[in-house]
Amino acid sequence: MAALLLVLGITPEWRRKAEAHDLFAAYIQHNIHLNVGAKYIDVTLDLTFFEEWSWRERQAMDADHNGRITRSELEAYRKRLAALVADQVNLRVAGRDVELVPLYDPEVDLLGNDRTEPLHHRLRLFFFAARPAALRAGEELVLEDRLWPDAKALGIVQAEGRDGCALEEEKPADPALAPALPGEGRQFKIKCLSPPL
Image (cartoon, rainbow, N blue to C red; front, side):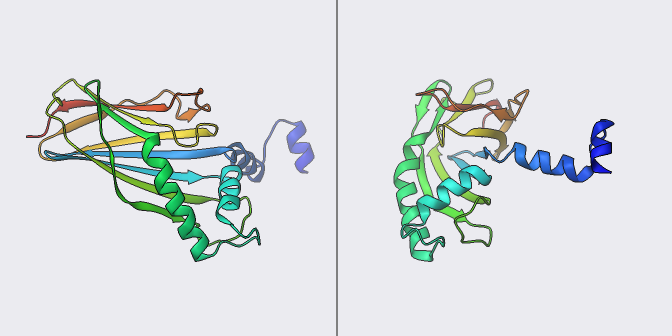
């Protein structure tokens, strides 16, 4: 029956779901959340690793290569990440670099499964910066993300203003991003409609 449907050009629902699932297996989803207030800019990156990249990272977590990730192995991985990721996320405001400082340690969520298999997992990174006086209406904030540049990515950016600040995210035509070119990062742009008071 399924073969007949395929010959007729009708894709059963289960087949469409499986194909969509396989389509994103080589991706990492980058959810960028930027919050601008009178004193600080907070940046949170919430990365979801799909099968292929989750499997690679889970292997890196599993120091004794026994197929399971222990709490101590996960803690050691988080410490290694903290030292690496700080230099891979940059922020420019009105064309000037702004120093991003890690706010909390990275959070890794294995989504209830500690095996080294092609599964999913999440990583959250937290940064902040002092808001520069240069932020005015019409100026642009650009977040450059050089995390896992070899992976295909799904990029989503959300911006929120506090203290009277209004922001507008630049919506890409396609959230699916190819691997980054050598030495380049993925750029997420936000326009300041009105600065904080």
